Amino acid sequence: MHQKKEHEYESNEPDEDFVCELDDGSVVAIEATDVQLREMRIALRDGTLVSQVSTLEVHLTTEVPDPEQEEQEEGLEAPRAKSKTNANSKGSQSKTAKLPPGPIRLYTNERRLTEHTQRRLGTLFRTNRMLVILVKDNDGRKPPFGANETSNKIFGTYGDKETPNVQLSGCSNNQTSLTPDSGEPNVNAIMDAPGVVEVSITISIRPFDGSKIENAAVEAANQKLGISLPGMFDFVAIVIEDCYDSNDCGFAAYAYLNSWKSVYVQDYFVYPAVVTHELGHNFNFGHSGVIRTYDDWSCSMGNPLFADHLDKMCFK
Image (cartoon, rainbow, N blue to C red; front, side, top):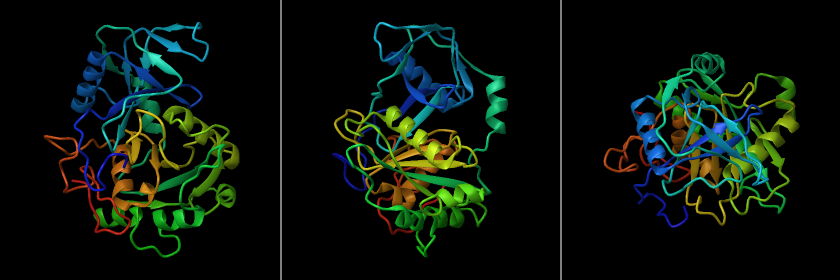
């Protein structure tokens, strides 16, 4: 996207950020030293750190809007790893969970593991329920497509034959698919189109503040649908007009590993290979590149194809 060619990523920077999910479901960025970030990225790749399951044995400081107010905690549970399709960005949120310098220790939190496996998360080889949130900010900025066209391009609701749903079905011998049906008729009735809800948030998306925007979008969708996301959904995609005025920009989309959430800018959310790539991260897949993060053009978890109408790309 920004400063990137349509079909090429040129950076080989590490592309994982780490965030902490609070009890109310909101997220804040984890601020750590370069050494700690490197240790976490290595642990993520070798399986020692499991997104949303592992516990960091550290002391941390949580910064709140009042810079003079601080509180100490004994550990950071279940860090969530976030992967962008472009690897240029660093965290830039108004709230952070700051780790003091020092080595980190990781272990599997059995309680979190049990809770995580009992949650409804996207799973290969079944029909996954998906919700798309189209976000309009307080300055009127909104995605380029409305609810009906979005539903058609994601799910094929009105006859589109080249969709992420078709990609997943075709790559799995029809064992994996997406559905806009929440399973709750009252929730379906509130949607603006099958699988799509339009919301307005009371903040601006400019400058870009990922966690703040995500939290506002989820809260607005919760209020409109009368649920607490992810609720009955396996996947939730948040779509904003664009990323503005931040070093965190330069991506087409990003997703949380082993989770339910992804975020898209511009019209990238209607590109089947891009959506499949981000859902792959939700399935807990990493990137397939070896020498460079995006040097693999052969599968969905490499460098996705950037167009609305293309032959399908599959997971390896």
